[in-house]
Length: 296
Ligand SMILES: [Zn+2]
Image (cartoon, rainbow, N blue to C red; front, side, top):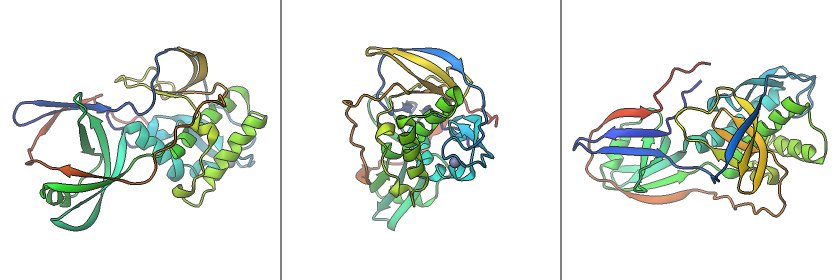
């Protein structure tokens, strides 16, 4: 399992200054106190809880393993594998504050796709881009040009909200049994439409998914090590029931309010020009939270 990217970093610059940068709040955060109610334990059903296929043989992590989920139920092969590359990559990018970028400059021909870059922010509102994997030497050449054109794709709400809807739906099934009714039928239809989309670009939006209320905690340690815990947020608009995922992400399953506006998702690629100063070599002195060995 890949190690989760840190929420904050501290880099000591050669001139002695310290560059502190943290993950931006990726979603609306409202004041409210979280009350944990019930730790859910893994539950197996006679058939796949998403599509009803009797061959529910695959171990299903809730939330996805990349976010710190554990095996909480069993789904069929298609439901187990169909969401990862379509919607769950966007969920991880949103959660970790990562973007996919292309760099172009006069020094190198054409556009170069970089790996994932983590976007972190300083208290002055400046952003810091950190390569999440190994970086290619070509970037040093591109960046040396001074003016660099950067194109970037940000994780799409249309997709990551469906990945969260899947978590919430499975949590509800684990708690109450495979749920029935119009709402549940619509959720299953939306999930299957995403699973069966020919590609990520074709994943249709889900109104139910886009209306989920999401809170994301940035404390260095998760609130609990249990992957799925039901809870209640006592906020300014009254209590909202939902589920705490991986100790950091609370998603409300309170009935959707039809009047609630769905924020139009920012989609498509954006372009910006970076003015690159003289390169400074630097040493990363601290990473918060401390990197940990993945536990499975
Ligand atoms: Zn299935």
